[in-house]
Amino acid sequence: MPSTASFVTSLGLATRPARLFSIVCLGLALQWLVGCGTAPMTRSGSGYSDGVEAPSRLTPEQAGDVTIYAIGLVGTPYRYGGNTPQSGFDCSGLIGHVYQTRAHVAPPRTVARLNGWGNPVAADRIRSGDLVLFSQRDQVTHAGIYVGQGRFVHAPSTGGEVRLDHLGSKYWATQQVAYRRP
Image (cartoon, rainbow, N blue to C red):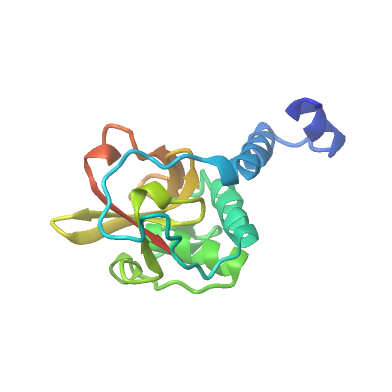
């Protein structure tokens, strides 16, 4: 099997900036891992379990496209109310843009409404393309897109930028979390 670097070179991407190289490599790796990722070790509210798969509006291909596209937006500036790569994103604006662009599905615009969108998913059944919703005192305050291997993409806060974080990190592991499948 050829190395990732030789594959990227064969695609003519070797002359592009290092960021594009990293995104392509990460995208290829995630595309390969989409079907074999493991669920994160986190808490979750109610959801489908006992081997029952939560229904989804997305095909597996659309879920993969959502995942790869979301990762490609890492580094885009945060902007409250933002919903495009040019203007920046807040967390729900990022989710709306990614799902509309890659899956032609329009999620609600606020995190409060995202909490009722799609179907609940148990922590042991989460897969790439699902939503990760964080709550404080039973009120949803933040959301992101799960991309596999315990990681999610989100637009965290004013002055920040879209980033890839791990659900098991010190901060996120202390939050109440629920998962939803669009």
